[in-house]
Image (cartoon, rainbow over all chains, first blue to last red; front, side, top):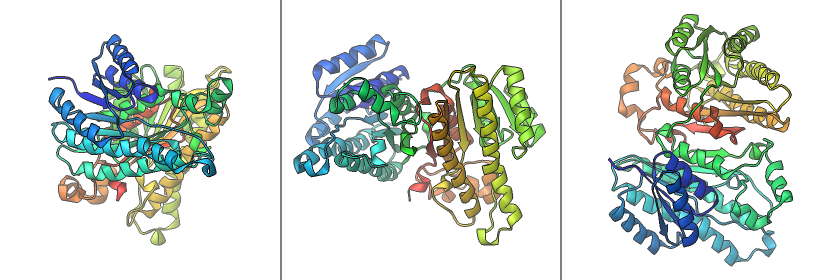
Length: 251
Length: 254
């Protein structure tokens, strides 16, 4: 029997890259999806260096045409994935009066439409498989509570979380069944944060000090939650919202 | 892809049956040293022996019984790293007809016992930390009924909601004090345990027609819940605190 296959979008950086490495360590062959070929190669090399198997699939996760073509290619070349992690996302911070509709739409495309398309084509691919599937949609604490100057992001992540609940109902009707869960990280120290706020001690302090726990959340923390939701340890977990935030949301 | 608990010392309450028993077994299988406790002293003894751990009689409403269980862990294994709190029962009368004694009993076993247990376990975790920030993980077994209700089980839903929010509150409190003691709740939906079998009967438990309102089509097993508890106890969940993990096959979605 060939090893189980896990497909990860946004796999060239941050949480997606850490998830690729963690799932490879758990025995999955990895399909790492992203846009940047050089960073894609870097992830594939990292998985291989750790003794795993990985391929890079370059495509634009906001395009239905590209999802459709990629799904066909994956089925033909590798067979159905058992795990799909919809991790591609974008973020910006800006007061609402300064946010343009085009900025809002661009974020919505990357953060929501990519997840809707990923879940749709994930269902189609997994329907061709024989094992129970698991789709993990990476949302955010921001989908559960409000963050100032992040209205577009908060609205988009709330949409991802609730969309995942309904997708779970539909996935449970499929044969084989597909579980769908929302994974909601708190503020995690990744390129997404440093890209928006810059790097340095002040940003690290901002990332850390909002948590109940006195430490910075890392991409590896979230990759471990991905590993939990991917495999049989979470066999009866579907439609759930797994918040891993160092207690930030409850503070 | 299983989570490990190598050499951690874990106290599992309610360990003689159901989720507690499955958790005691799985925690031991994943490398932990286990103190398995239960009000049913014989049952605790039996499971302790089975998993090569320690079995302790433990009425969770008695502060002195917590002292005994924690002392046993410390004397035998040197410390305590985690608590999985499972002791609990249910009452099935409509809440307006439930007598006060029964309601208080539910509160005592689930809410007060967790309050006492967390105080005692946290005190030990701090004492053994030698001035460094204390480490540990506490997982309270709540219920998805903390977030929704079903007919005839409103009193259970009430105490489980209290329990779940207590996990959040204590998680924040301990983090803010500089400890790395994490507190989370696991919230199962219908699970094939003596508690549920007692309520709906063995026949209904095996009837697929009885599980139409669970999207995945079946009740969870105690082992499914135990897997979640093991993840939350493990170092891989070291950024998860004040959180709640629902294991219900999608039951609470509709």
